[in-house]
Image (cartoon, rainbow, N blue to C red):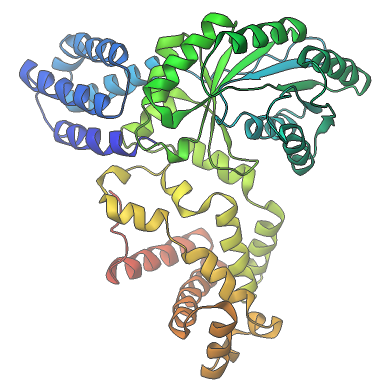
Length: 460
């Protein structure tokens, strides 16, 4: 998300960063470029006008012109104002009510409501330690109830069975009773959507809301619809007492206009953003972190949290102990590392949170983000015997040809993997001998080798 906006703004920001002095003319030029960048990102016009005006008012005041580092001061203002438009700080779910706390999910058909219900259930179960039940009140869409049943099994939460013959309000009342009997902390209600907003839909969701009396009413909207996302959210917020918004499909939204428009137009906070189809693809929305990402400052906090929550700590501990004892790093260890990277969404998902990506050419970013290299490497290692994985020295020419055939790759791919394995093995060996300093030296050597072979240029 925000790739095009980041690319456009990072050039403007870079020109200002090192300036020892800024004039009102410089600032006017910079805010004009910010305005164009926001409009190109499909941000709603009232939001663009308000945002640019606030930046201009603060920028031509004492804050920038009297600053020792005016370029940096202006960047901070742009970052602060972007964060303010999106809600300043993360907005948490209010679950401090007698159980079960009911969460009602509303939105148009195709926005990703059912998938989001499962993602939210998993989030509440794992991050908030809640006992969660889910129920579908969508009696129109074929297989909607079965889809939610399957997803509930995947994320291991309670599922209340309903049928298409029942009235939505009756389903919700029965689910609340069952949640009480099951001592569930939270009940998440999936609702029916339409292809467009109509009176019948609004009447139905109002009746459902009255029956459920939810503590949270979340509007689920597809971020790829841009300005329309904010307009649709506004229509729902006028019909329902919404408490927040969930933006879905943000991994497919390069512009980010919805994220910058929804809060300002609806007055409702964005609480979560959905990424991909996997059950763990739901992130708490942090406006200040997102503003930093837009300005190419990265989002190291989110990256650390992602690693903390998704890395297999037992495997990491075993590898650390193995290296510390001087035992050899083998291909089983390498496969574990590659699989953990895949679990975190691959290289593209990690890249998105690194600072300085706005300066990397777009074709290089696309090449890395869409890279099939990691799955290919995992397949190659999977085609080896246990003995070969434990003892890579056995891999002569004929064995490499057999492995290539078994993994549907070329012998050159196997050779490339072994080259990368040798680099990782050297790095781990240095870590074992020299602790953290040894690891840093090893990583420096690897980065140098990558740069020397035409890899991605080092980020500033």
